[in-house]
Amino acid sequence: EIRAAGLFQEPNSYCLNLFVLTTLAALHRPNRLLLLAAATTMMMSQSLWGVAAALVLIVLHELRWTTSLRRMVKTSAAIALGAVAIFQVYIWTTKYQMDAVPFFYSRLIEILSDASLQQRYINNACYEEQASKNEMAGASQVAAWMFGEGLTTRFFLQCLPANGLFFLLKSFGLVGSLALAASLLFASRDLSGRAKLFVVATLAFAFPTYPLVTYLLCWIWLPMLILLSRELTDQNSRAVS
Image 1 (cartoon, rainbow, N blue to C red):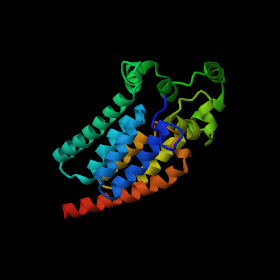
Image 2: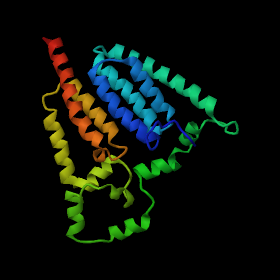
Image 3: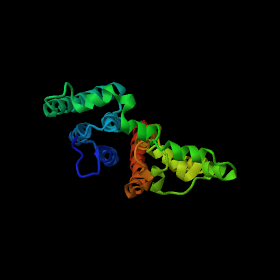
Image 4: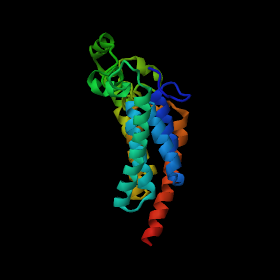
């Protein structure tokens, strides 16, 4: 199945990169046309995560720029319906004639047995290696879970669900992961409630996919996310005063 994945390695990668870039654009200035284009192409990639991320992106944009909850819901719904409508036209006009439904719906119907879902969130099917690791006893295993085993992408080949949250725990351990969370809380301590919600929602949705911390883009994106969120805090402060 060839899907519209842009210049990136696969549809999910395209969606993650676009999600990261468009969240910064959404913080910087309102642009619903750009938002619609980003959300629509993420859906057209037919990545399941990408479709969900597109809807989250729309809500985040309106969270940033719309003060009225009622208006935020209406505008988000209108943009989402527009993106979904274009997506539906695309998948139905490009599906194979022999298929009863487009490829995207075939994946949804068989979601519990979807290979990508299994690998990303459950396991990567190397049961024998995992069993041998579970038999390892002693303090080394406890220390590895507490303090991690270092930052390397080779962990994706070692019976680890291929998503960023498991990758963080494997690399930094429980202590290191909590330290990273504490550092983020400290960095965003003076943000407004709305700005904090934007940052937390963005990170919470971005990290359960690829190992984002191994991307150089992540370490440019994260400080910019917090810095631009301060503008939202300043805006809220001016509105109150």
